[in-house]
Length: 614
Image (cartoon, rainbow, N blue to C red; front, side, top):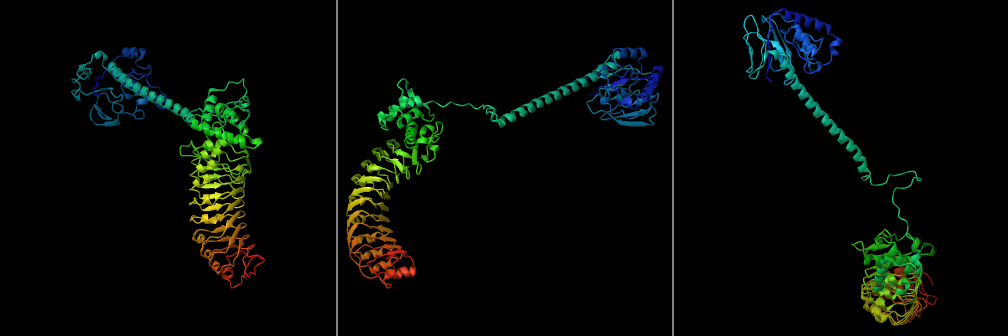
């Protein structure tokens, strides 16, 4: 930058010839031919006017100057892509001219007499802009360009920095040097641009391939195939044939896992050892499945729980839905995910089993007693479950609810259930249980509900139930109990329901029962009770149902019973109660005025004016 070329022109015939040729060349290149002219290759530059025609032809031959190029120094020698003056018609220069140095983005062409000047835009700074222009004598340009002239003759020389270039290379060499630098810079920029484009293309291709793969989960999942005839790419595992194991074939050597789990179950006393060797027994089939097929039996807790569940399903499922064909317990599904199963917060330990109303049939498995963390066991309303209540249920020390209602259980109540001191709900109604209630049941001090209705239990129970101070519902009806019991109810301050009908209880009605402030149902019908009706019972405001029929009470209906504002049922028939019950009786007044007493039955031996049925 800043280096300029100084070229001296004289009024020689050669210079005039060059100018004439230049004018003719410009006329010929007007129009479309000028637009289609290809850029000159680097190195082809203008020739100063003092070169003769031989030198011009030599440069054309060497390729430094196009054959049809004009031999003047105007800007038409610049490649068309870099020529901003193509459409500007420059004025014809007089013989005696001077061109002022150019700077910035303009050049000024001035005639010899300074009578006319033209300012035109130049190329941007840093572009190909160093051309050979004649300078007037005694004129200097910037700090690094200096022209030395005299009045009548011009010498041709050039200063680049402080270096004086040889005269032989005055115009062409310097122009060639300047063009090569510009071309190199252009090539460098072009290479950078191409490299950037290539990088962007690679990134675009990578993104185009990567995004679809990532949307398919990294390309690891098999493609979705709508045609069901096309084989699936997902791996399949052939089911294991467990029948040889089920059959306890002696020629089959048990697996190491089989022996490990078998020994563990025996040591925990989960099953009888002999049942493991019995072909096709529920225990044998469950052990084979857990040891050789199950994928979740990885520790003692899990294989114990899953073995017990497998026994339950093998034992209790209907014949057409036994465990080996059931989908209830899958080899790859945790037991905590099964319907009816609830686990602790660790998602491992089973705490609840609720298989009520499942149409189960078979004997109640003793293996359930191995679920020592179980809190709720509900198998109610499976009336085809038979057998006895296993003694092993006494191991369920965490149990709070035992619901075996409406099964077909036989036998006696196991005394081991007296160990379940956390038990709150013991529901064994509608079975065929026989025998007395074991004395050990007095330990069930946390009982809230005890329901053994509709069995064949017998014996005296008063000394047991009077220990259940937390009891709220005591249902012992439709059994064969005997002895006194009502006096044993006095300590049960939270009692709401006493259902003792259809037994053989004896004794009188203790007045102290009036202190049971929460009592709402009192049913002692169909027993061997006698005595009078305590007037104090008129103070049990919470009482809704009083049923004392079919007993040997000798009395009249106390007027105090008219205070029982919540009384809806009063059954006193088949007793020795005497006296007319007129509309003026407080009970009738209460019944007529409030309409609360819906069922009032006094029997045919009593003249009752307000009874619903005689």
